[in-house]
Length: 296
Image (cartoon, rainbow, N blue to C red; front, side, top):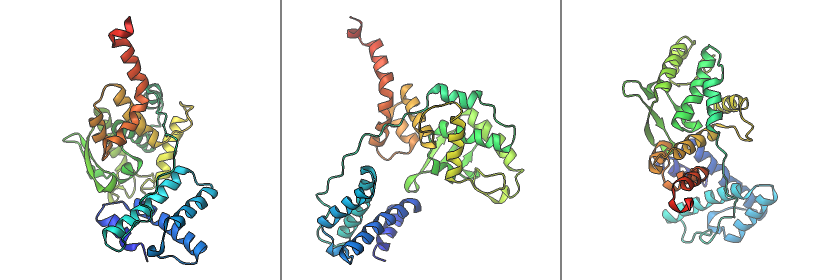
């Protein structure tokens, strides 16, 4: 297969996850299939920019948005950079390509009142499932971890002695996060109930279903969406919005941007600065109350 060595490079040398590598493969196969259908063949040495432009037009005509198209082209660009690096190619056909313009994507976080309504006022069932659901929601909001990171948590990742939890992030990067007292107690209560579930002792995954199987992405989304639908009218109610709320609320309370970056597991500060847009209203309010010239 033409792309296998590149995919191995992403997974082994760049530490990309299987999920990310699979996404690259889909994007590359999409371009290959287009070339075979349109030009009758595909070989990386024969690819030129007009062919890529035709693919972009085809993607747009098929209903793909600019953000999706940019991601697909980015995968192709990375592949050709790899070919240059391994001296299989002398010129990258996408070297002068400019990404399509996209609208700034500003996610609306949950308000503190909405968070309190779900975590403090909502009556959870006094059962394994009720305690598990509350623990998941509390943990996501208290740590800001991603849904995929939550799914990868194991029982041994929790260190009650040091009050920390070990998280496996993107590109297999580990980070240690502090456990708030409320989370620590919830986890203890949950683990006590978890031990009574059949098959739990042979399943290292932290969060499981009542049948002892590991939870999945859809389950986490349904859990967050279900509980927050009871208190919020926001259009998006997902695990990512909860992570977004974590970052926004910390920044609104004056947390250092670099500290939030480390907590979120971002590789660059630019990724964290996205959350400052939602803190601008609070910043303006504080500015208006404190600056001497505003009082004149």
